[in-house]
Amino acid sequence: MRSRPRRLDRTGAAMTEFSWKRSDFPEGFVFAAATSAYQIEGHAFGGAGRTHWDRFAEIPGKVARGENGAVACDHYHRWPEDLDLIRDAGLDAYRFSTSWARIMPDGVTVNPDGLDFYDRLVDGMLERGLRPMATLYHWELPEALSLRGGWTVREIPERLADLATVVARRLGDRLYSTAPINEPWCVAWLSHYHGDHAPGTTDLGAAARAMHYVGLAHGLCLSALRAEGVANLGAVCNMEYALPADDSADSETAAQLYDGIYNRWFPGAFLQGVYPDDILAGLEPHLPEGWARDMEVISQPVDWFGINYYTCRRLRQDGPVWPHVIDVPGPPPLTDMGWEIAPEGLGRLLRRTARDFTGDTPLFVTENGMASPHYDDRPDQPRIDYLDAHLRQARDAIADGVPLRGYTFWSLLDNFEWALGYDKRFGLVHVDFETQTRTPKASYRALARALAD
Ligand code: IFM
Image (cartoon, rainbow, N blue to C red; front, top):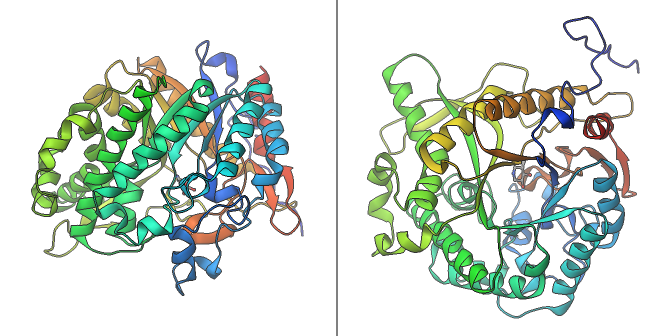
């Protein structure tokens, strides 16, 4: 097969490099790569317990090809090679997550091998000069807790705070930063309203309770971490830039509603201790009794705030039942996830978040990246272009005064993309899932050159 011709930039030169280099960013700006536990480690190893994702994957039609995280990238055994890859790219930090079900297989009882694994991993980062950026919970709820009601019951935030204490005591002295929960919107809304992720519920009441209890878990974990002396605590929220699908007033309303559920609910709760009125109007009837008393806990101070950004959505109204919002496909080019490429949305959300929610609190882009197929005969140019455009937005936001302190590439490795299984490839490094061979892609090599300058 012939390779595709390389694209040319405005001057007619072949584009294989990023248009920025490290020295274009402020001194001390942190470049990181991210992964998460269940997506890479290999959950069959090291005494980890079953998670709600293992169960979800067993339900026909829920996960592509019935795939799960049992082996994934075998990072549990290959972590030294993976940390070498991060160091050799010239990155400063590694954003990883701890698996609740590895550390506490039944959600409560500590598995010493699980803690030992993260202890080795964190030491391995420090030996390589990488700053450990930890996330406590990136979606692998122990099955035993899921069967007790999961995120729709108050017990789960309390148990996650226990995990926070355990992790703090073992790793807290060596972590550069810690966030309790990755992407609360996905944990709550995507998993309980849309039902696209485990546990696959499609119920507004369950989603509303989860939208509250995930926030409560965030607050309780921050308290637990602080009580153990862990410093530099933050939050990581995903955001999508919301646009009306057309110029009707109804579509404008739909975009605002989507923006509220996706981009304002958690920042409002975490940073200001209030839920946005327009969304509260729809969710309050379903919130647990006495919810308002939790807002003080939920809004503990954070030292930094992270945004995961991938795309925008074009919204219109859909029927009479709240929240009556549906998105319509955006124009090509789309990523392999079918997501519109909208780098300007990142710049807008960074500015809006700083202006309306975070003020001078340091911001981080805690995830950004593109699913794109990669074969030897198919260069990795779309990923380079995607990342380049988003990094330029980040640089422009900094120039406008946004206190953005770091940028994280999703992902270091091709990995288990949840309900879509293994064929959505976000990695800077290609993984052959048969042999577990890691092969740096053109984007990885371009990144190493940009960071060396
Ligand atoms: O793979 C996910 C990750 O687990 C959370 N943020 C978005 C990524 C791409 O979908």
